[in-house]
Structures are given as structure tokens and as C-alpha cells.
Figure (tube, helix red, strand yellow):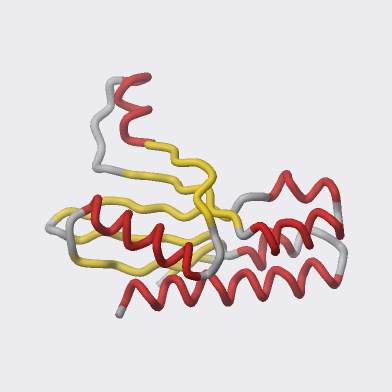
Length: 132
């Protein structure tokens, strides 16, 4: 499942364990998590709003990032790749991946679009690993 800008999978299990599985699956594809934004905690603190757990992980593969930055130094505006882990209730956790193809399609450079396809393939492998 997904949208024009991403794809998702639903995993059954404990939220924190799913986050650990996502982080490990990303690591297996040479991605590190550079940032973790706890959207639920932030909205609670700033607006007093309660919502289910919702993390935004800023994932980066240094090799891909280096190639992208060499092709276009301003491409950092489109990085890193976001991965969302959100509690869907009932022991279900939805993991969503930004699809880099539409985002990197904004860059008018064939090598960047080719790179976007490679990044997407790697993120799809992460998604598939979570389904196993």
C-alpha cells in the first residue's frame, strides 16, 4: 500500500520492538538513522494534543547521499529519506517509507533520477524484510 509519495507495510507487534526491527533492517541496507522526531510527544508538549505513538526517522545511506551531493550540492534540501513508524492500534504498527523517486524527480539530472531508483529499491527491500 502507499501513496504517490511513499509506500507502507503493517507489522504486528510491540511498537518499540518494531522500531528496533526497522532500524536494523535499514542498517542491513547501509542506512543509518540520523534523526528521530517523536511527533506524538512534540504535539503533546506544544499543543496538549494526544495521539498514538508516531516517530519520523531520518534515514540516510552515506554512499547514496555522497553521490547525490556530488551531482547537485543543493540536493541536501531533499534529504534524508523519512521513515514513519506509527501505532495503528490493536498491536498493529504501520511503517511508511518516503518514495525518493518523486522527490528526486524534481532534480533535472539523469544521474540523480537513477540514484533515486536505487534508493527506492533499497527502501523496498527494507519494507519487504519487515514483512518476513
